[in-house]
Length: 133
Image 1 (tube, rainbow, N blue to C red):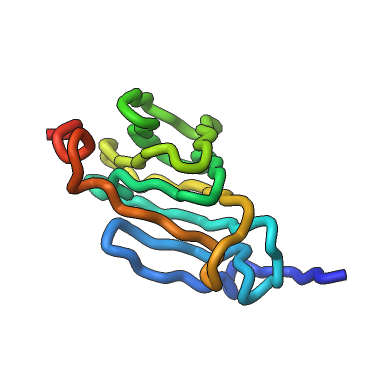
Image 2: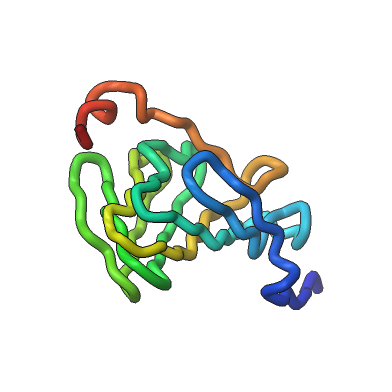
């Protein structure tokens, strides 16, 4: 059985151009082929712009703060305790439009690629490039 504890001090945090990613579960550390889990931090005014995960479903759960979550052309404000399910291939984006930092848990399944996830940025394509102007 493949098991391990992960203490907060041991979570690897990577900077992205849209925020921070804390790796809770990814194949290279856990060996899991079924789940990739991330702690996502979005500072005020930051976003993870429109993208898709071609071979993965995703859930996003808001731990702190609030975000404007877009699923295709529909958008909702999600607050602490709210969640979104995103089916594979669905265009989506997370935007921190609040004055406080947002912290989210993102879970993607199955794990794909060595990194555990793949995404295709579509933020420069119509209609996504004109939805948030």
